Length: 548
Image 1 (cartoon, rainbow, N blue to C red):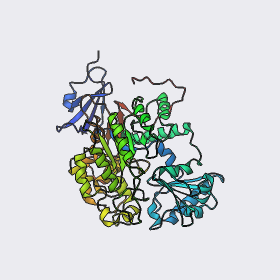
Image 2: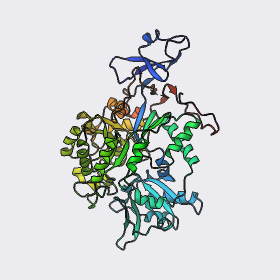
Image 3: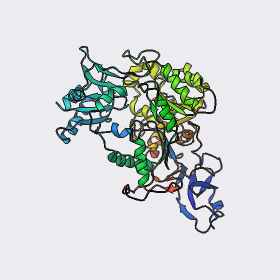
């Protein structure tokens, strides 16, 4: 009978994040860490049948977990031509025009990632789509996924005439004559156009989600927190994937509750908390108090420079507090999208008013927060989740971006206060918000250290005093993700799941520039090396047992 670990891994460096003394060997048994120590100590663990894998000069860390992704919903957002690299309207027009030529005449021309900064001081509109592809139904989501632009033909196709009203802060923007400009703010308005888009079939989504999760694993991720159930096929997609094999990464799913949702959605989300598969589980809920600064739907104490961003997405914000309390009473951990200073301040007060029963409640994004509310933040008991590349990709050091311009110089100086959050001793989880920004954790951890787009030589650093250390960035992708929702994980210690990321060199010793391209030699989920070359099995394949 085997008495030693089933697998022993060696590496020059092992960051357990659980102990200060060095480790260079791990033992894995039944998918969990059973031994931690040195190479010399490992000689006493090895038994007949133990598999020994020596990664040489590599480094092993706890498996990286992205605290904010949308792997299913993102498939409907990231469609068509990517517009995020367009720095001017003319560049965006050329991309749309080229894509339109490649589409069949009757197809809708789709784009995504459009940065509203290219409109300058003008309000976004669909006019550039009309000019780029005359007469075509065209639709492009903006980079924040909280707004979109539609061509005149697309508006006609969707039956949008500018008279629409919504039960939340969404809007169809109209000109002085009441005609829609093609700018659609927030999800309810966008949904009107999206109902007229080609439908993605579930088989296509199954394949696309699998490829995405496999790419995430290749970048070093072993897990992700999916903060929505926006696509009604989501759980069925995961069930179908697990009939064919294993998900490449683990997923914690927190369904979102929108301001316009009926009251019964709370009971539905609470009932879903028991749903799970082998590598996915529903645990938690996501709420949204406001929209985004860039499209004028954040909630600020004072209007932005365009006179906008003055209201919550909740027409009656007290409903948010009632929803939060109902979820807390049911034992459901929550995370709330809060971007503008008044929205963040409101959420701080709401969380502070909840009973201190050990349940974690997290604030998502925390983009712009004044000193007075920051002082209240730590006392509230809230944990924090932020996305470093939202700052480094979409905010410019010279203040010429839409976010900075709308806030004005003073408020923009409170941008993405990662350093202050860490110095205050709060739990800080990190992530990407894919498809809003690229998911590669190496690039995100690099940007957290530099406060600039590290992969772009010569890029400017935005508020560099908020840089994190390499270890703090790693903790933001490991132990802090778990702690932010009251879970246990992100450390390599006995009894913990053997979720591991194997780097070719020590991510805490290389420069941020080197980290961005540092090779990932493998990812382990529950002690099993993820097969990055595998394709989906046939649907007729024998289902894997729940114990695997």
